[in-house]
Image (cartoon, rainbow, N blue to C red; front, top):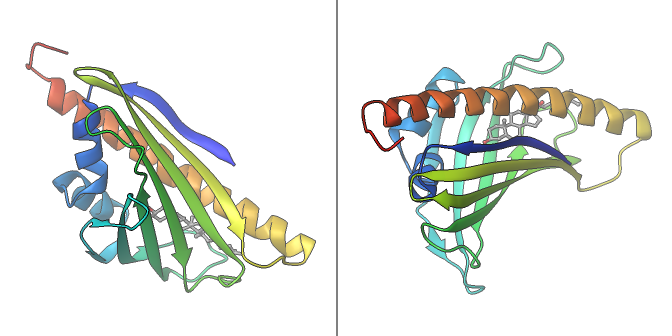
Length: 177
Ligand code: YK8
């Protein structure tokens, strides 16, 4: 896997969770810019295991010339029961892109860790892995992996940049930055 984001933000852990994992205006704006359309989401639901789960469905716009322009996607997010409100949040997200070539071979697993650093700061880590449901031919596998990494790197670099903008807006004039 790869660590795409690992940075301290002047944003509280709680606020960071709200920004990324609720129906926030931040997420809505980010989806708009990424041309992720038709998003729908279930609410966070308690699981027997003690964690929480929610499922998102949306259509992504792809700018890889090897792939069609759009794909529907399903993302299942699990908030681990070890998470502590305001302190520590661990979210695993499995993303299935249904309309790309070889879509039945792979999915993407993203792990988000939000760790409280101080009252107004948190560390965000985003770790990503491309997972295989069945083993493709070696050449196909490296093709999938290579194309997934480039798309993921672009996406998370952009997300980090937008979070830095949000941080600047939030800390502007607040005095406690
Ligand atoms: C989520 C992983 C792979 C996929 C894409 C497919 C290449 C197909 C390979 C062929 C286009 C928002 C990605 C990047 C689309 C976007 C997905 C996003 C960024 C040529 C063999 C969508 C996080 C996420 C997870 C997986 C990403 C796809 O929040 O390369």
